[in-house]
Length: 303
Image 1 (cartoon, rainbow, N blue to C red):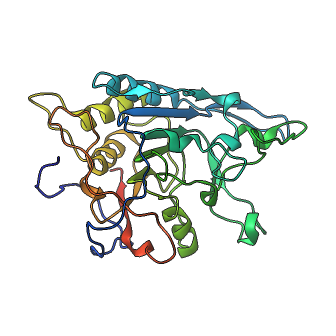
Image 2: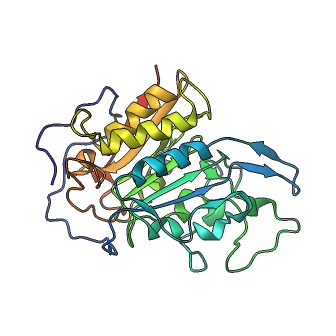
């Protein structure tokens, strides 16, 4: 159950948000396994490239680790086969395709952290224009690039991600630009179509940094505290508000935090395990071309 008070947030709701157009009678699509407090994470923080030469060294893992520790105090567990890190993170593990494992949809809260970049110009998969952010996977740099049913080569586009048809309610992408649409409606549609029963997708619509006004570790612990609260002095916050407040407190000035969500009810969702006993509300539908106006965007720019 959740409180009836309205959501309060300091942050701006994007003009892409629309009025409530759907009822609570929308059929459920999520085949949840009944274990409502499973956490899973993948982190591609460190890579020394060989094909072609590319190097990055980020420090997102303390964010993931401290968030996991914080939620672990209220019953959240990291489900097998998580956590996965660096060279163990292949594109096929996230891909929803026929050869993909779609591990993000096997847990209630899924966190992916790492590097993303603007897609290359020219045709992309499916013949679509060549821009829009991609998650940078180690499989892009296998030398020689050897694909099989587990390590499908390449990076991950929005069209390759589907969350919620199996188990996922909340996804967190701690990486640059994953929820940025570059002013293009077709990219925004692809972002929204990742919702296949998922309630909220948390991330950024700009560059994001593994430093700022807080360390990643402190930011992860702070997000966990916002989600669960501390009895009796700190009330739990709705997931949407908790993420946007964390971005404001953590990231350098000008960073844009963003959440994609079903606006039928999910803006008021609380993460189960909080001391008040509040939780999710109505189950979202799967996003498709006919109902994309039911999915909205909430933004926050770090001061």
